Image (cartoon, rainbow, N blue to C red; front, side, top):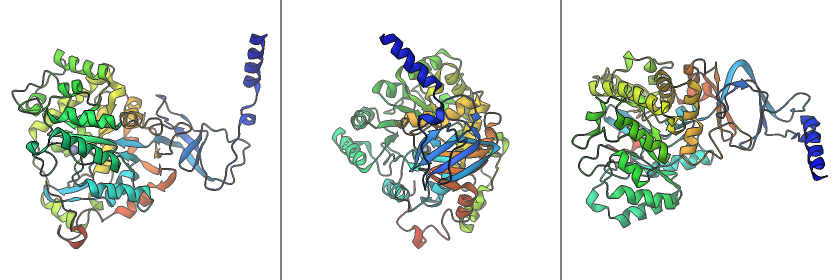
Length: 477
Ligand SMILES: [Zn+2]
């Protein structure tokens, strides 16, 4: 009898027309996006977009059936057949500064956020904050809707010698714990260590985890008091940036000296990859950060598709151009090439779910941070990783690495409405991610061209860096 009832219920559900089940009436303030294609960050394919219904910043319906449905109360956005909706990108190593080739460095929290958002980057983890108070101020203004920009997943100040004025001897374990507690209370979403010692890192990790926050780090070979990423993984670190570490990165010299000559088929490389997989440690390869230091004009990823210098103030542009072209860094050329092979090896070993996109793009007045994610995803495709996997690295992997995947990183009903719409199919050609037409952040829809137009000519110091407007914001490294 019981079995018959269950079967009857299943049959009833199966035959009920979908429209009769639960049609949510649209209301004023809703946005409906119809047409075009959808990469949802869950599947590896692009599918037709039947409809998205967004209300109060949330994706209420995905794959909605809009036929015979009254959507007149909503704002309806119709996409062209060749347009693609993507989850908003995560840049997990986003710099909010402009540094005119080492001169006149200023933190820049007004135009940088607009440029990130105009590029479809809706979440950023600043990979180390020189001015954490200023950064927090920008984040709060964006959250209150007083300023346009992506989500800022604050990292707070650097832990380690990258923090201006940091001296290891000044930092007891208790002081590190207090600092973690302070910044967790202020809203940090994770921590960044750079130049940290082997005594300090375990304390930072343990305390951050107590707050449910992750730790990422730019580490070294293990020489002196530095930490090899392998040892940091044993300490429980969550994410690693720039290079994977392991026994092929020997402590008798700096990490880059080993990295530039690294044969990625060595067993030490496979061993460290295995460790990442066993411990679920995320890896941010920052491939283009090295390519950029070499000779950007030589490489496909550095082909410009927009005049990035046009965002600079005339003064900043003049200072930048007086220092161009830069002298190429031969070591970074070799590292760039090693890294393309290294990240592919990591992917082939099953690490696709652990690779995240972080740009570490310096805004030196030549290329700007907000454009970096498109270069990085292209580099990952050039490394040999399938475009759909790379798109997940830039979206859902970033959300997962930050502990936010229940809310962000994919286009699924119930998640927050952070997405962008590009012309073309990025699985057929990854450079289509650059052709941003619309961006939605927290359910608010922006026209990318309008964001771009609003940011032109405003980035960087207007006259000199001690100009009134910049006073108090200057932070030199
Ligand atoms: Zn960085």
